[in-house]
Structure formats: structure tokens, C-alpha cells
Length: 447
Ligand SMILES: Nc1nc2c(ncn2[C@@H]2O[C@H](COP(=O)(O)OP(=O)(O)OP(=O)(O)O)[C@@H](O)[C@H]2O)c(=O)[nH]1
Ligand SMILES: [Mg+2]
Image (cartoon, protein in one colour):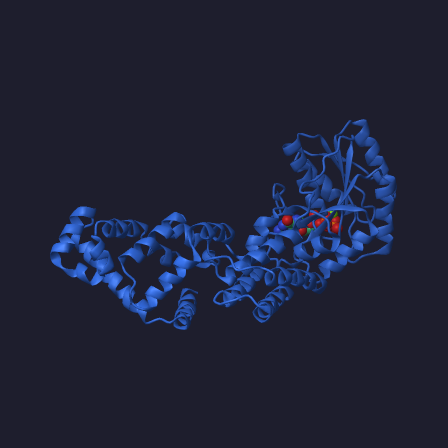
């Protein structure tokens, strides 16, 4: 789910990752990329406009954090705004003391109401230990009642038969009476759906909600709905006193727009997501996880926090100058290695970088974290003179001494020294613009 949106946004953020400063023009460019990605993901236009405006305002007013690229800072702002759009002060379904608490499910035909009705009954049973009854009030399609009865039986959920009533309101009132009589904690009413928003059906639903003692109306919406998600959510929200959203079919290859559109338009909490056809496939909605997934940004937020703690802008500049003048020595290398260690090691940094999920396993297998440790041990066994003049380390007696002192075998030490020398030469040849070009070539190769 959300894969398409995740890929587009992370590409666009990668494009601004190398920029020197956040200003109106480069933010506008990045915002434009994000706007296009959101349109492609079927997020409705009014939602996109307000989202982009909030991101822009925040980004322009943000001071640069030491040691962090603007691209990463921008990522964090987009991430935070995405969470804000998807979040709501009410995180969970309200469990009322009233008996029975009546929940009605509304939504278009095929949205997943009947499936969700059983999923929710099971969830309330196992998470809150409540006795739950389910009833269908679909007087238009007899098969709808059969479907609910059949699934309820399979899952051992109490089903109230409403077949003897002839209209939806009577069905609802009859079900309520039966649930009361049985002292049930919860009654879930599965309402009829239609292909399109239908005034007759809406007024029928309104009647059930107001006269059927309904406490919460949950709006069930298919996450595969495209641009129309906002209009449909709005029509239901205008007609019925909705109290939350359940997003179904999140396991399918949804473009992701419906989640953003529905929550922004209605300002209602998304309480659950349907993650499959089976009755146990219902999960509480987690905005942070969805936002990170949309951005494919791993855990860049914690990486940014750590970088703030461990890297000073002054040191970073000094190192960059030394690299470019070819004076990068073992002291600098040691401090780089230690910074990596302080941030949890190279693998931990890599895993938290945007796009980490798409790194091929082959590339990850090539990284030997122990080699970093051995390199550190070798440098620590060098004299201050050797650290400052790496070229003097070539002498066999020095290699022998450092090998003995650090426990790193001579052959490996020679390899480490060779690699360092190669790295120093390569880095010297790269101006920042060359570096950027090399990085994008590297990224393309990785793809
Ligand atoms: N993959 C997947 N399929 C789902 C999910 N929820 C429901 N479905 C499927 O969607 C189809 C329609 O589901 P129903 O529960 O019958 O939909 P409904 O809203 O009750 O439909 P009407 O009663 O006709 O209005 C069924 O094939 C379900 O198996 C989900 O979370 N994931
Ligand atoms: Mg149904």
C-alpha cells in the first residue's frame, strides 16, 4: 500500500537533498514535485493545496540545523505535516458504558461494511471482552442478510435475524430490542450500501441513526477509491453524524490518496484499517507508520536527532576542507569512525536512511562492520606522528608494530592502509559538485 506515493515523494526529496539552502524557489520546486506525487496518488486537489501550503510555510520559516542537509530537514517537515493531517485527538474507538452501545456502519456498496462488521465484533470481543450482537438492516437485498448471518456463524458471533421486518428503521429498532433483551454490550448495525450517493438511502440511514438509538456511525471507505474519495466522504459527513472512519482494503495496491482525503475533508479520526479479507485482518490506525511509509523515509527523524547531538557544523566544515586539500589524515578518519559509532554504527545509519528499503541485499552484505572496528583499533595503535602523516605508515617496521599493538593482522593492516590511501586520493579529486554527481550515479547503479 502507498508504494507509489512513497516512491514519488522520496524521489522528489532526493532531488533537493543536495541543495545548499532552503529558500522560496527551491522549496517551491520540491513542493511542486510533492504536489504532482499527491495528484498521482489520487489525493483530492483541495486537500493537496492546503497540505502544500502548510509544508511551505513551515519550511521557509525553519532555521538550518547544524550538520543536517536541507533535504533531510524538509523531509522531516513533510513527515510531520503528513502525521498532523492523518492524526486526530481521538485515537481509538470510544467504548461507552451504555448498554447496548450501538454502532452503525455506513458506506458505499462494496466498501467492506459487512466484512468490517464481523471484524469489529471480533475485535471488541477479544480486546474489550464485550458481548457483541450483529444485525443487518438491508431491506433492499436479501443476500446481504444471508452474507452477514453466514460469516457471523462461522466466527461464532451472535446474529440477530431482522428478516421479519419490512423496512430498515423497523429492522434497526427490532435489532435494538433483541440486543437489549439479551443484555448485549454492543450492537453493530450493518447498513445497506449503494453504488452512488443516493438521497433515499441517505434519508433512510438518517432515520436509523436518529430513531434507532445509534451512538456512533462509522464511515467505511475503500482505500482504492481515487479522486472521488473526498466527495464521497463529504456527502456522507454532511448527511450523517459520523464519528470515525474505517479504511478498508489497505492490503490491496492502493494509491493511498483516500486516507489523506477522507481524514482531511471530514476531520474525523481514522480508527481502523482493514488489511485483508479474513476476519482477523483489522488493525488500529497508526498515522506515524503510514506517514513514514508514504515517504519511504525509514527512521530519518531519529537519525536527524542523533546527528544534531553528535556532529557539530564547525567540525563538519573543517573535515570537508581537509578532504578537499588532500590533508585528510588518520586523526580525521578516526573522528569520522567514532561519529559513526556514536550514531549506532554504519548499518544502523544506513537502515534509517530514506530509500533503505530499496537497497539491494548484495550491497548491504558487502559492508563489514567489524572492519570499521579493526580500522579504529589500528589507528589507535599509531603514534601521533603516524596519524598526522599517513604516508609514513608504509614503513614495514611501523606496520609490524601497529599490527602487534592493535591485534590486526599485518596483511589486513596493509589492505586498510591501501584503502585509506585510495580513499584520500579519490576524495581529493572531488569538488562538492563532482561529489553530488557521483552520488546520483551511485544511486542509479543501486536502482
Ligand atoms: N483485500 C481486502 N478485501 C476486503 C477488505 N474488506 C472487505 N473486502 C472485500 O470487499 C468485498 C466487499 O465487501 P463487503 O463487506 O461485502 O462490502 P459491503 O460494504 O458490505 O457491500 P454491500 O453490502 O454490497 O454494500 C468482499 O469481497 C470482501 O471480501 C479488506 O480489508 N481487504
Ligand atoms: Mg454488505
